[in-house]
Image 1 (cartoon, rainbow, N blue to C red):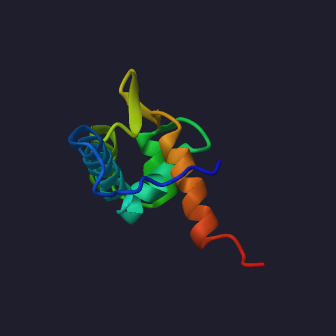
Image 2: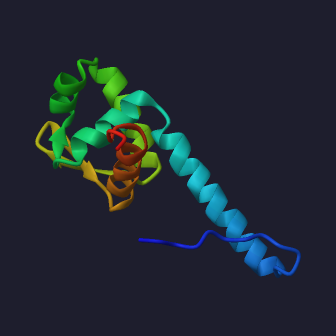
Length: 114
């Protein structure tokens, strides 16, 4: 997908500039939400499917309180969705954004250079 980046110039209407600022604010909140290593790793694990909080604790070798705190932030930003089954709480990715972001991060930082 090859998308053109917005170009900010003097001829932009106030509405167009407001839309760009709104998108920048949304993007900034998203980037802040994924800027923590623990949250990024949670998203990496959820790419493969729904996981319980207990599963995430084990996968991350982290305490329940730490995992729950990071999940809370991801939920607040609308990146993950919880589902309760009895006493267990399961999480999944809310939409396509985290997966697309992780693909971009992988391309930028993990793929071997040719």
